[in-house]
Length: 334
Image 1: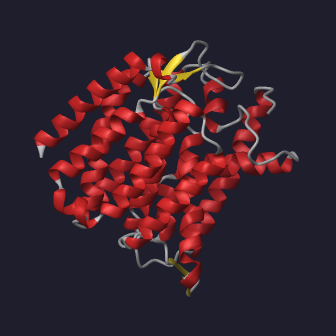
Image 2 (image 1 turned 180 degrees about the horizontal axis):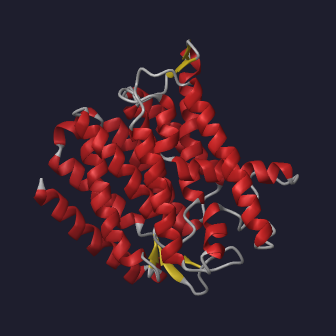
């Protein structure tokens, strides 16, 4: 076991270094704009290094699992490829959604699908024929939610490490080898990535990283529903979900498109509060995610989820009010 983690770390470091080295030759660069937190051109596409390393080591060391979940691994690879293409050519949103939908269909062939939402005030919500469309909606939603929070050096990697750590513990607790090994390999490869991405970053993960990480977290989250209540997923990966919901609500109330870009995400507001201290902002948001994730981990599978859902909705409302107040004090306009 130690050998595979050592190998994935070394391979990740090597490949990320090589991607950074040749990034400009392949057009893998991030040019700053008015929404960027950086002011100079920086290499991107580090996801090519740490995602590829995790997948190849997983396949080499866990052949039986790989053969059992080969369609799931193919689905992850499809999202990874479209992420790499986006880093190079800025792929259209429609193309990304199409690939994610096809990839989600492949997941369903391996039994990774949301077919039941749990019990709410005594009513069991089975999805029936809506299972696949709902799973496609949920997976594409979270995949892009993690992509949206990738706005500060080290933030997406830190959030992902926290989420994968909790899912690794769940996988270990319930003897789910797929969840455990895929999560732990990604944790190690992300630690390798942080060597290059901790502020000041010398390379960004790009969509090859954030899009694929969001998809993989979705995959593992759906698998975890065999052991955890549905609402637990909302808490374990809370920060990207809360941020996306709050931003969309604010844009809708202001009469803007919910997809319009701005600098009013949770990390932008906290960054201003901490005097543009990126490291402190990332650590605080990582700690906040850890508190949410540990809360979600404690929820019992047999519990009625009605009040848990209300609790999460209350969190959305409180965060919305809290961020609005912070923005008013900062004189921040979106």
